[in-house]
Amino acid sequence: MTATAVTPMVESVGVSKSFGSNQVLKSISLTVLPAEVLCIVGPSGSGKSTFLRCINHLETIDSGRLSVDGQLVGYRQKGDKLYELKPKEAALQRRDIGMVFQRFNLFPHMTALENVIEAPMRVKGVPKSQAVARAEELLTRVGLGDKGDHYPAHLSGGQQQRVAIARALAMEPKLMLFDEPTSALDPELVGEVLDVMKELAKSGMTMIVVTHEMGFAREVADSLVFMDGGVVVESGDPREVLANPQHQRTQAFLSKVL
Image (cartoon, rainbow, N blue to C red; front, side):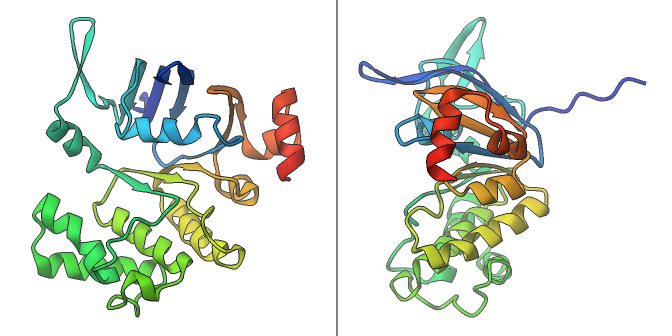
């Protein structure tokens, strides 16, 4: 009996990206399987956030291929050429990919609940009663069941980030991308956001997390990638890479953060 091949949730093959003369990504190849958690670590300016933004086509790529759940992201192939999708088509793909940013990006004039129901109603046409019921469920899931009527200005940074996670989940994504979700938070608020992310991982959500939280990477990630200078320097089992980095650049970086 041959095992059925699993379609990777994310497959990156030789992805490169430049801004002007600055090449930020240099032929990045990696695979994330369904229900896996990948953590990407590395110094500032190593291309981690740019790579994340390429996965949901917030940035275009110059060469290579990026697929989510077997589908090319942002492009369609005709013969051996790739053509960029129209913005509307790219936005349709993006519905399946949740993204949580460093800054919470909540609408300040909307309550927590309104922030969570906005996209499902507007983008997916979910009826309001259904969107509200789901939003209440998600806010409870992230520990904010009693904060639905609060505006972002009246929530702590950690609470705002948890609303942002609930908002991303409201679109029922198959993949969640986190771009340093705790780096803008006061240290004592970091744990409450990481706890929500740990729960998500346990529930089987496929996640790619750019983070400086090495404890989270060690505990939750299935694989760890260390990026520097736009390349994947080292990757593997998080516990192995963190305890016994093979590459000099990984060793130098970890000696500063661990």
